[in-house]
Image (cartoon, rainbow over all chains, first blue to last red; front, side, top):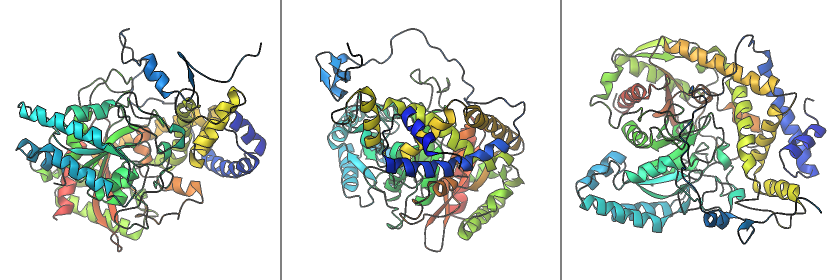
Length: 96
Length: 474
């Protein structure tokens, strides 16, 4: 067993997914199965090979510091699930 | 008028736009394959009027009057876009994706959104909050995915073109399973601005059409530099608007690579189609060259590490705070995030987010994510070596024809294994196109893929048009 239920509890917390016990058990079996499969990558000899993330070769692309497309406050608030005047509402973060 | 080219010719010659658009809207409304998730009828009719006015003023826009469906992960201003997910319930796009805006500027009319696998994660279009899409050739079977709705819509004749996105084969594979053309350009050829991101180093938007010429024209209109997307190449469109007059001419003297290892494990009818396609190309004057892609055997785990890692990062923005669905009565901020996400994301999406989180986490990042990126570089090297000896690589798109709905949903890994022929092009950033080449004993379509060197899309499309001409009238 590569992946344990404890691992999945940790991943669910990192990924902000509130899994119940049944979902945790199912996820553990599935992820264990998949990770066991992708582990084969470790057998590939990559000595001296640099990782490649951007195959188009575009690195540190910049543009002039001029405003592009911007959304108005009204447009942003129109999308919000809960809003007050001039603000998106969320549960209190800091307790006095 | 089943092609983009014929539609444009008719409109330029005076065919009125509104009846064309209305006919498309009607066909989409009557869709029995669940390919269409949303019609934008009012918007489409207004657009039709605008295009008509432009024509009256003497303009001849390149895609005038062409009705188009766009995948549900492409933003259209003022319309919902949900990536076939519950988590984007209520979201209305505040802007239009660059690729779509360019089609509209060229006179095309967006009629609605096509069904897809949730967040583009899937190969069968069975994982959509709107329900599965059916293959128009056999409604008990899958259309492929994740652009299953787009492929099915074109195959069923609802529209002459639909936009899809391809991260690991999601345009090419459903094109093959539905019997239409599906083209994924070189990574960076078409702007991703306004495409809901899945794997940012892999995603590309592309057309599904009934002809290669249509695919080239539509891609040409969409392609070219876009300051809004830093990964979009600073070049003009790399594919031509029209292809050379005699398609078969491109094949004379062309070196077409093929990979002997690709033959293993193919459904017999797929094997026969590959052999017949090779023979047809040889007869048209092409030289067949054996090439090897040793690291292609690792492409599946490389893809599922990189794509899921990038997805875990990209999907972190769906947290119930600023848009989309929020859970009821969150106890605190973490509860808001965790419950909104578990309620909003389907099981496959949750699975990939967790796998991605794992491969990026402390202690595993080097062994999984960085190692995958190293193997990715080796795969790129394999392709570079192959393209020194051939102009394009021919091969199968899918090891089998369309399977039955529900047949592969029990084991996620089984579905992943079906992607082996298409993943490499995304990993290496290369262009690939699926062209219908045959069918099996049950009449289910079989596509063959041509992959080209990076930025060599113009030549790839010419060769694909040649291939298409050979198989249509041998």
